[in-house]
Image 1 (tube, rainbow, N blue to C red):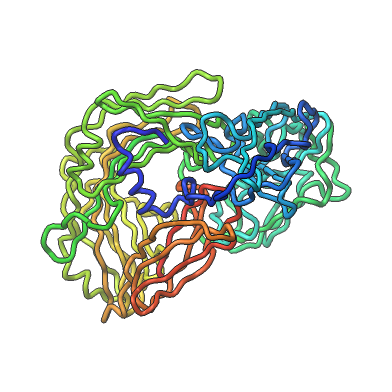
Image 2 (cartoon, rainbow, N blue to C red):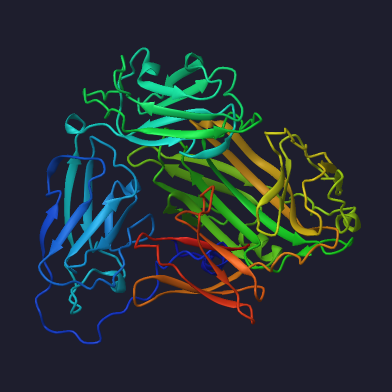
Length: 585
């Protein structure tokens, strides 16, 4: 994280967009230090200089004395020095202590690419004192480094991931089934014979297969679209298969080991040609709130005026970008933090502060792979953005008949051109999406010139209060051919949030939760305070990256009579950072 003129706003976005768990939380240090020898590393597996290491092999360090196991393992990233570093830096490893207090295991979150050299360092220079690995008596471990190499020739291939996810439901019928392997595979003719397909009304002969250029990913597309409402299953290298999956070095994928299933939906969705591409861009967003027919006012909820720059790698295949920066009109440059995607966020409290922090003018976005020539993307942020969206039939939104179609109306997006856009999201009391546009499944795609949209009957329940956001987006940069498998954008967004009610409105939506200071408990678990509606129950969700498309629920809390609660995450382990949010149930 770079230190520049915007650190206060950056901290606010972490407070608003969920707590970035504990990179800088204080860790208990001994109050007394004995004059003992410093700890020494007595063994490491894989050994320094080892070859032929597997793609999922962990690093295991054993020390000659008990260590301070309250020290959380924090990997180094762009602009930040942790207590261990891994090169290449995009390997995403995390560390845990063993019960013997002398064994440290650092595991890869994903498979490590083959035919590369992995370099590791414990206690790299430039780190924070409180993060250093040290003995139980507080004596610091000296910086120590090593390396090992992975080797294709000795490693059996594995299936790294597949999509749709195993057990997925309502899968669009025009989806491509993707199989991603941990090393290059032989592109054999008739490879469909290595997959056993089953499904109601499914004809395996209709699948068309295509490998990516790196021979690591196979796409399986069903001609004419998968059958609707069908359970589709697949298994790789079934017994007796005439053709098998095999690595380029001649090692065969294990038979009858990899399989999955999913259920298709009843309609065809169009994700668009760039749905699985990566992206790069900058944007600034202002949020307003409308509580009557009068003009919306600035939203006072923290984190609603935001500038961000993000480099998101392609979902499957393509390049992985490991460093990036954004240069502002005044010439200052900020590096992008490397948390799954490269990103920089800044949040302020008013639109005036946002305009001062990210003014109109020339911006430059830079990003590159290790050892490769960087891309330099100039963009010009204009002086004027879109107007503030305002609902023109606000009174009607407070008395919607759930059994009938409802037309939502708003002011004209003045000055909009063909590249500008409008989007709408409607959430119920549990923050589940009940309606959104654009929607490739219906399809619904309101142009920027639209001033209304019809919400179908029975979208809502009777006596319900929903939260609606209407956003006008002005595009000042767009490209799909500057960087391979990457779409670029530059947007100014203005959003209007308001409540929509049916019947009596029910009990109304619970207040948005506020998350307080995060800290580590004595048992090493992250914990934090929450505020919200008294007696309301909130789901706690956690991800490892703010760019995650889904937020898994890890627990719930119920506010006390004063609207307060405390949550302890007993499942987080020691892989940081982690991001949290609380959603009313």
